[in-house]
Image (cartoon, rainbow, N blue to C red; front, side, top):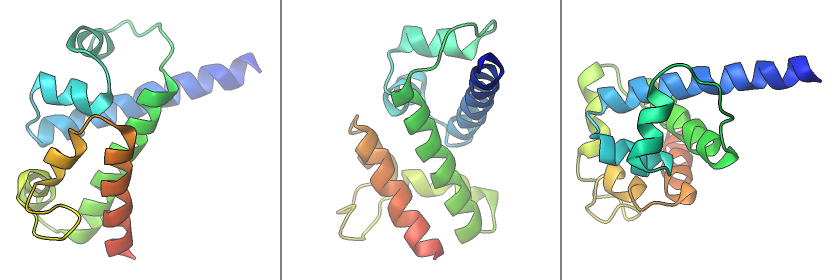
Length: 126
């Protein structure tokens, strides 16, 4: 059992590292990164620097999972890095977005904001 928890902890931190890389590609400010991850900026700084000996909260892992899903869907929908990374900031005329960007929607602060953006993108992928 201890081995399983340790493996999950390592996987969670690897996923968090990937999410940080994505947020950097999206040119998110530290304030935006913290909001997307559902943490304050001091917690953001803690998670961004080693050593990472603390446990990741389930809410944070859910948010990371959504961010990774969004990025994966964008990689399937677009071929250029500019399109993949720029899409989140572009205004979107689809009814769900109502002219706002996906980032504006995701910055609403709830896990469900991320989930619904991910779900819509994954539906477009098919």
